[in-house]
Length: 88
Image (tube, rainbow, N blue to C red; front, side, top):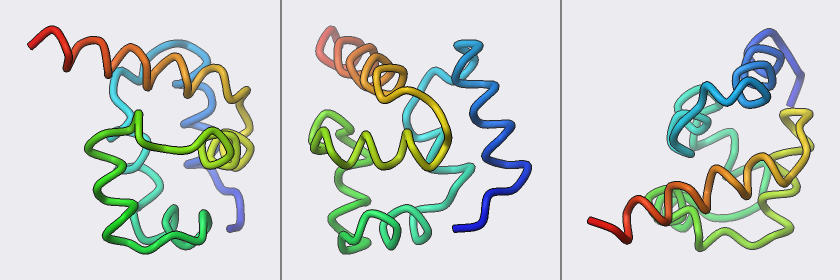
């Protein structure tokens, strides 16, 4: 995937803590693009987006590398979302 302004903007938003849900990342980059980049089926990827805690660590690391952020930023976002869903 060629990096463009979207990736730079997303990186800034993540580093600033402005992204509150993993789905926001997917909306910006697209399910088709990300599922192809990770090498997983679109349907499997779609299920994982709804439950991001189901992503494997290496998949999170690949997405982080694509965006240009540390994997810990995405892992923290996933854990925060997971805790919110569990409280409901």
